[in-house]
Amino acid sequence: MTSADLTTLVPAPAPHGFPGDDHRHELTTTELHDAMARLAAERDWATLSWPELLDALVALGRTDVPLSRLTEGHVDAVRILGEAGAGPVAGAMYGVWASRSHATGLRARRDESCGDDAWVLDGTLRFASGSGVLDRALVPVWLDGSTSVLVDVAVDDWTPDTTMWRTGAMRLSHSHTIHLSDRRVDARQVGPEGWYLGRAGFFPGGVGVAAVWAGLGARLLDLTVAATTSAPPNPTRAPRFGRMRADLAAALALVTTAGHRLETLLADSPRGQAVLAPQELVAQVHDLSTEVRAGVATAVLLLAEEARRIVGPAGLAYDEDLTAALHDTELYLRQQNPDSDAAHLGRWAAS
Image (cartoon, rainbow, N blue to C red):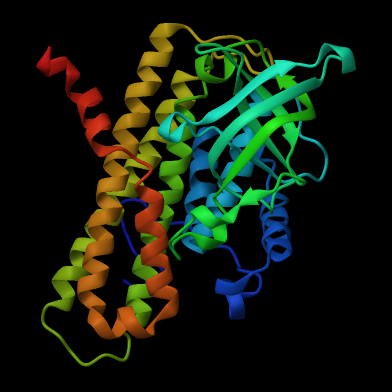
C-alpha cells in the first residue's frame, strides 16, 4: 500500500490541485475567492446524487482545510437554492451564515416602503465564514423569537469585525463576526417562513460537512506520511499509522454508507418546491446525520492525536503544512457538540 491508497475498505478520493501552493498559508481574499470559483466550476453541485456529492466533498477536505470549509459552504448554498426552486446569482460565491452561537443571529423586518425585497437587519452574526471573501450568503433572519425566513443577500460590502478571532487556527476561513444595526438591504426570500429549518435537506447538510471532515483525516495522513519519509526508524510508528488508517477507514465508511442511505431516504422528496418535510422523514435524517457527524468527528480527532504523536515536537515545530492542518482541523471539528449528539443518540435507552 502507498500513501496514495490510504485505505482499502473505501478508497479516499484524490485531492484537487491547489492554486498558489507555494504560499497556501498567506492567500489573499481575492486568491481565496478565485480558488473557490475554480473548484465550484468543476461540477454541477446542485444536481449531484448524494454518493457523488459526498465523494466530491471528501476530495475537497483532502485538498486544504480552510478552502474546503469555504467551498463546502458555497456548495451547501447552491443545493439549498436548488431545493427551493431558486438559482444562485451567476458568478457569485456563496456561504450559509446560520450560526446562533451564544444566542446571536439577525433580526429582520420588511421595509415595505421600498418594495418586496427590502429588509432592515439588526444584530450580530458569529462564525460568518468567508466574510470579506464571499459575494453573497444565505442567512436565516428572525422575524420574532420563533419565526425565521431564509434570505439570499449580497454581503460583499458587510464589514467584518476581525478583532474577535484570537487564534491562528482557521485564520484563512475568515470566520469573523458581523455586526449590523438597522442595515437596509435588498434580499430575496428563499422559501416560506420556517422552511430553512424544516426542509428535508437541513440535517443531511451536516453529512456534507462530515464528508469534508473525513477528507481532512486523509489530508492529515498524507502530511504525516510525508513528514516521516526521511525520519530514522521507530518501532512505534507502524502501529500508530495503523490506528490512523483504521480511523480514516471508519470515517470514510460512515460517509459512503450515509450517501447511499440518503439517496434512498430522500428519493421522493420534492425538489424545487420549498415545502416542509414530513416529521417522520426529518426524524430519520436527523438521527442519520447525528450518527455520521459524531462518528466521523471522533475518528478524525483520534487520527489527529496519532499524527501529533508520530511526528513529535520536531514535526509540530518545523512542518508548517502539517501543524496548520492539525490546528485547523481540530478547531473546525469542535463545531460538533459531542455531548449534545451523544444525548440525542442515546435518548431511546435513557427514557
